[in-house]
Structure formats: C-alpha cells, structure tokens
Image (cartoon, rainbow over all chains, first blue to last red; front, side, top):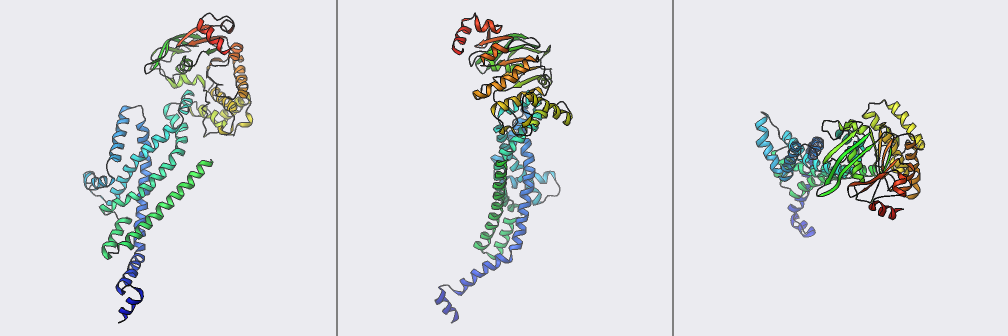
Length: 237
Length: 240
C-alpha cells in the first residue's frame, strides 16, 4: 500500500530508491579503506619516481655517451620498457623474474621495481632531450676552459637542462600515478585493487568506481597544480 | 708558440681545410681574414681541438696536441677561447662565470679566485657587474666578461672567433678596446675577424684565407696596401 503510494509520487520504486542510498552508504563507509589504498598508490608512485629519476639520469647520459657499449645498453633498456606494455612487464616481473632471483617476493616490491624501471626508460628520453636542448656553445665554452666532459656536464649542462626537463617530468609523474592502477592485477593493495574488492562485495559499480576515479582525479590534479607552480617559479628565476 | 703543419679537415664530403701551415710566435698578434666559408673559424677551432682534425699536426709550446696521448684538457687550459655568441653560463653570475674554471679545475681557493676575477673585471671595465647574471648584460658587456673568463685560466694564448660579429655596431668599440689592451700587454692572439681597421692597426701579421688555405700572409701594411694575390685583392676591394 505504502510502496504503491511512493511509487506513484516519485516515479521510482522503493527498491530503486533504497539502492541509491545503498551505493552512497557503501562508498562513504569504505572511504577510509579506499584512501588507505590511495596512500599505497602514492607510495608506489613516489618511490618509482625517485628510482626512475636516478635510472633515467644515468641511462639518459649513457644514451649520449661516447662509449658504444653504454649507448647500446641504454638503447636496449629504453626500447624494452617503452616498447612493451607496463601490464605485461608487471606480470613478467612478479611471476617470472623476481621468483628467479629472490626467495620471498611481495606484490609491493614487484610494483615498485617494475614501475621504477618503466618510468626510468621514459625519463631517460626526457633527460636526453633536455640535455640536447641546451645550446651546444655551452659545452664548447666549458671544454675550451679545460673542463673534461664530466665536469662540463655536471657544472654547466645539467644545471641548465633541469629547467627544461621539469615540465615533462611532472607529466611523467602523473602518467605513472595513473599507471600504478595496473599493479592491482598482482594484488598490490593500492587504490584500484581495493576498489575491486569493494565492488565485488556489493556490486555498486557507479558509486564504487566513480569514487575511485574521483580519488585518482584529486591526486593527479594536485600534482599538476604543483607542477604549474614549479614551472612558474622557474620561469621567473 | 702555436705551430700548425699540413692541417686537413672535412665535414662529410666538404673539404674545409686543405693543408694549413703556420707558425705563430709568442706575443704575436695574428688576424685571420677572408670570405665566409673560407675555413677561418674551423681553423681556429682546430687549434684547441673543438674540431677533430683529419690529418696534420698542431703544436702548442712544443707539445703535440694532435697526439692522442696528450691530455687535451691540460692544453686547452693554456688556450683561452672567445666565441662569437659569447657562450657565457646563464645560470651563474658574472663573477661565478669567471671563477668556476679556476676553482673547479685548478683547485684555486674561492677567495683567491674571486680577488682575481674582480681584478679581471676591473680590467674589462665591469667591476660593478660582478653579481649580475649574463641575461642582464648587453652584448658588448657579455663579450668582455667572456674575455675575462678566458683570461682567468691564465692562458698562454687567446683565440678569438669573430668576437664582434654578433654585436650591435655601437658595442664593437668597447670589445676591440679590451682586445687592443691585451695585445699591447703582449698576449699571443689569433683573431678571426671582419674588423679590418682592427686587423690593420693591432695585428703583427695578417692571414688571408680562402677555400681552406692561407692564400696570403704578411704585415698588415703589405696585405691591406699592396696585396699580391688576386683573390686577396678582390676580397679587399669588396670589404674596404
């Protein structure tokens, strides 16, 4: 009797009405759980970016080195990690490579290692482009003063290249943050993985996945605002 | 001081230097003139190995530069180079531009290097610009700082690669004045230039280059007033 009355007034059945509230309640009651996942997402991203920058710096320099062996090594590394899907790299690392070298492996470890190697390859190309964008007269001036190649790189070229490199680097961070969602496949308990757990318990697709998407959006937005700020600071220097 | 024997250099198929021979004595000022594309700049850049030579020998103070065993960085410290486009380090102040190499390469104390840099800036008339970044300097000022930077390594000779060619006309004079002072102090100098007035007035000898060779050389008065080679005559008739 009541149900029929509600049906007539709102045009929705009570079941539908309650289902809407249900999704909202499920999302809000699991928000803490999802945010913990987001924290792990940030942790994987931050570590991978740090290691990736180190890898990228060295392999970027190797790519331009006078040594043929170093150039070849860098080319193989960069080609492999840019030329194959990150998803496949994660599976290969977690199920294939890591068990060969380590007795105990964790999804977190595999996630950080794979994402570091992957972003390192992209950052290597960013570093190379940045160095090549520095006027070649700078290297000549440094060398003409008697600096060797390493001194000239370190004292003259890199301090100028880093400004050129920062905008694409921040872009790479944002890409990487989103790409860490792929490690959910090896059950690293980051945001996407936790989203999947909540979803498969309650089947509230719009609320759960919409909420997960929003959390990603907030994180990437904060990063890009930070990036704009840094860029502006550098421009005025 | 600088000796060059049968120097050859090509870029791909293009032969730029086709056998340069010369000997430059200590305290001598040599100006290299000639049409663009004649190989003047390449010749100068070969002297401190910014370009690798194909064949031939270069000696600096009896040390063979073209010998692979020679420590090229050591020899380059004895040769100051000034570029057409200044090539100051934009991320460092004027003072730091000058002190960087003495501190980092020679291991000079920071205080000593700064004292010397101030002295050099006084010499080029820019003491008041010590803490300024290159972007805030005019072209002429940049080039004077570049000269001071090269002098800071206390080189035995200075190489100038068209030092006034990218300057506004009113700034050419201030740079040439600094170079003139340097010449009168007895610095060995090789100057690639289009400033014929400077070449005539300051140089001890003039090289005229065309198509990768030193076609004619002599005292400035000989080259400018009584050129023997028809190519020299034709070039000078166009520029004078």
